[in-house]
Amino acid sequence: MLLIKSSKTLVLLSLLISLSAALSAWSITDTYFGNKITNLDARSYAMGGAGVFNDQRPFGISVNPANLTLMKKQIGIQGAAFVIRNEDNRSLPLYNSFDNYIDDAVYASNINSYDDYASAGFSALSFGDLRIGLGAYFKPLLSFDGNYVEEIRNNRNTDNDVYPEKIAQNMIENSGVLNQSAGVLSFGFGLGEIADINLGVDYAKLNGSSTMLKTIRWSQWAANVTGPNILPAYTQTVETDLNGSQLKVGTGIRVNNRFGFAVTQTFMATLDRTGFNRIQREAYRNTLAIDTTVVIGEDYILPSEIRVGFLYQPRNIMRTWFNFDVEFVKWSDISSHYDDVVNFYAGVEHHVENRLPLRLGFQAQHNYFYNEEADGSIIVKKVLSPMITAGSSFPLTKSLTIDLGFGYSWREYEALDMFKDTYYNDKLYTGNSTYVLWPNQYIVLRDRGWENPDKVKENNVSFNSSITFTW
Image 1 (cartoon, rainbow, N blue to C red):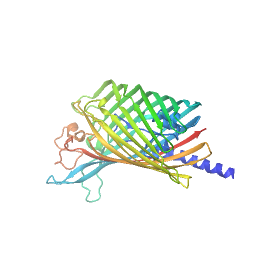
Image 2: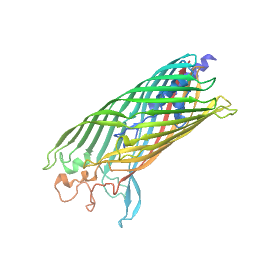
Image 3: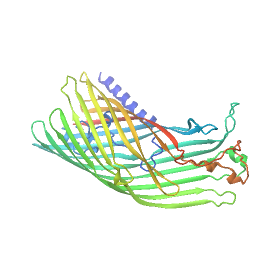
Image 4: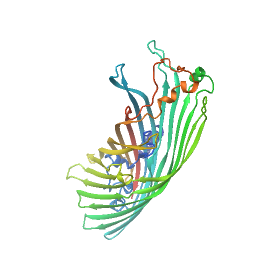
């Protein structure tokens, strides 16, 4: 019997590892601000990310340092794996010959996947009504990963099932992460047989790097039609390093067996962002090649956050937890052009026959996208990203537990075309009065601005697994 249980455990662990390897993307639009990874505790993730009051899992200390002594354990260790699959569909408005809007035509669709990993641990001791704990965790705070591929094809007639020729291929390859390495100190004070108050502080070192590679490469067909060395290739490389620190304080109050309350504040952090932005374009006709490098040296600001959370355990035959968090993010710390936002996280855990936990959750987060115009001006757009979550867990031993969390999020917004259409005007490079690459000589290639932007629809399927040991 013991051998059978061990075999099942190995199979489940192998499945988790294989899932992480197979589903190893993020939004390509979030190149500057990145994609924030808030909570890597799979239990809290399955409950909508709510976890300011968390007395169940060690990773609760990464959200609220006071959760360390809130947990009635001497030792806790947790490892987590986070995987996300991103689908990005970009469309442009389609008009008829009378300039009447018909529909949005999808011109690029990308599906990619990424993975991240984290760990946390703590130790706590009790001295009567006083409880003291120390902990540490390592996790990604921002992910800059993203991939994008777009094929440029001409307007050859397709009535006879003839596929248009491929003129060029555009690519964006982003990679990088901002890691958070933190130490946590917490104190707990007993206020009675059940009630207690806990105070904690978290100091984190933030460091990481990001790389963006943006390229335009002409197809072999285009090179054959126009002639060798006529069409110029384009490359943009941006490499940056981020370094800084961040402070967080929190409190957690257990009122009784049914109700808990917690508050945490993350202070604004100013990081050093250094690196370079290099643009290269080959020479063509009477135009010289471009190879310019701009040095980057600026402040990168992470806005302050205040998060309030509630826990309610109703008097019920089956064990049930309700968690609800409200988060205030002061984006105006970056600039007065940003609006402060409020995010919501809610979840429930219900134990079926006091054995199998079923978890459901919902969250609504606001994010900002950062766009730099050709004239140097900056445009930011606020986007709402809802997400629904679910999950469960199962014990391997009395002290060892595996949690699983799943999420589905979506958002829709407008964005600028990432590659300008005028770049594919071959008349600029050949000097001819007519197109060589475009059969229809009546088209006019021009860049689209905010008066005619792309419509972007994204959806993300995410998977979070964690293994916890407590004693």
